[in-house]
Length: 248
Ligand SMILES: [Ca+2]
Image (cartoon, rainbow, N blue to C red):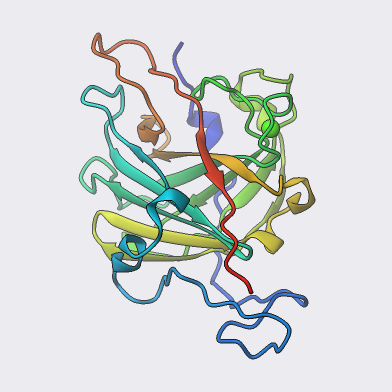
């Protein structure tokens, strides 16, 4: 099956980041006397060293296999707590051409951690993604904050087909930083995600795709299985991520 990403790049908004804190969200730094919350991952420190300090059992990791069909993404890590969903990727900056506004990162989320809802068989074996983020990482070659449009699966349960993502249901302001040319960190506030009420308390599924321009296609995605014959997509289940409890 050949993926058609031409229609995938439907609505890539580039919006300026505005600091957002939900009405009922705890203050960072412990200003709220009712809760103590300090995010363990910073996206303003030009470093990914904070990832190494996390309990490894709380971090979901997917690494590229020796022979992926699309090898532009080398590693994906995801960590989530009560407030933020954080992810970092190591990717190939050459394969991911960064001079076009339509260079895009897609994120797929199985929000209810259930295989009996959602779809998108095209890339992931479990085909149960409920939400998709679509946004640019660059504008005219310069890094920008990731502020994707959000789409909801509208097709058959466990079905396939890009067109079933339908129309955008909203936009979310993420926070992101390029630590190097090939390492990107992003975090989104769970409270700000459209459809957040459907999150399972236990966790969620997560997959990521990097695509470039209107003519080519994915340059890399994870999780992705090995494809030694170089023809078929090595489909794997989406990464399973649990929510780590950090608040006292
Ligand atoms: Ca689902």
